[in-house]
Length: 142
Image (cartoon, rainbow, N blue to C red; front, side):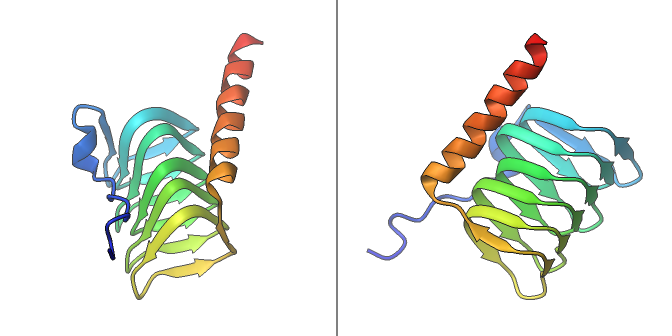
């Protein structure tokens, strides 16, 4: 049946109590790693890495760095590569300058991409996430 195997979209409400908001007038310089959800209404200069969760870039949000997370929703500006290990959603005001890696993607008319689109297989997504987790563990033991 159509839609019976469709994945459910990640909603920021699903991560209640674990949501970080970077306000519209705020600027974060440095890498951000977390479990849960982050909504960027301001500016992040650095990489965003979520082991489990959602990264949402709002209409006024801007990220200068790479984004890696299971679920990514973009309606603002991103200058860097994006890896959505499960689901990528690009809304009408999304402006991306970088390569996109995704397992499934939705794109609304008006979104703009300057880069390559790369659909990952399930195995590639697992390898990418496992490699990142091992790199994180290895860097803490040094």
